[in-house]
Each structure stands twice: as C-alpha cells, then as structure tokens.
Length: 170
Image (cartoon, rainbow, N blue to C red; front, side, top):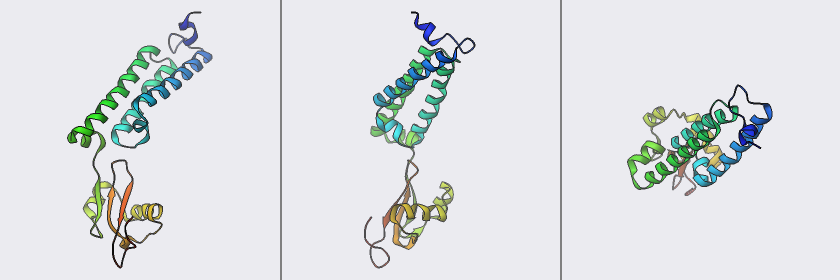
C-alpha cells in the first residue's frame, strides 16, 4: 500500500481519515521531539520556550490539515527543536544569549521596600504581589518580605524578612 494513500497529498484532497492518520503521526512525532529536546524545553515559560511552542504548533498544524507537505514539515519541526536546544545550551555558557532568549529576573521588592519603577516596568501591581504571596507564603502581608523577584519564567519568588517583622527565611 502506498504511504501517500494513507496520509494524502494535500489539504484539498485530504480525506477525514487521512487527516486523522496525520494527526496521530504528528502527535507521536511531537512527543518524540519533546523527549529528544528535553523536558525543560516544554516545561518552562521563558520567552525561548514560548516561541518554540507557538512555532511548533503553527508548523505542525499545517502538516495535520494538509496545508503543508508532511515530511518537510516534520523536518522543519525537528530543526526548530534543535535550534531551541542549541540556544538553551549556549545560554548556559554565554550570558548575553541567556538574557536574549530567557530574559532576566527583575527585583520587585528590595530591603522590604516596593520598587515602584520595576513594578511598573514589569506590569506587576501590589495586588499581583499579594496574590503570589498567598500562594507562596500563605499571607498577604508585604511587611514579611525582604526581597521579591519576578523570575524569568514569570513566577514571583520571595525572600522573607528576618527579625521582628518576618518569620525567618523562606
């Protein structure tokens, strides 16, 4: 049986079951790429990871619907995952690539004081900080925080204040 009969040639002549077969192929191929690219590639929310997710989704959806040829599209997806892996590795050894691809943390609270300029630049409000405090430290009391950072993946991390206002370290 001709494999092109199973997966179809293009979107105009693609039958429903051929699109289904393409979807299964693309699904398992993407699982394989995720394993080869490392769990880290799909588990974080850095700009590099978000770009990869959008590009892979766009690229591979065209393969499923037949708007792009199957095999070249699968190869293009592999190139994208390889480029992501290369940039992620380079970011470990060369800081400018890390800043470009992953960003850098932004300090939101320093010495127990809100850093208003950094909050505004990051689009984070006091209400946002209190929400993160409820999740992380189970309090809304900003006076318990010595430092807070908006991390590269979008999470907010806190360092508790020592002494009479805080309860120790986080």
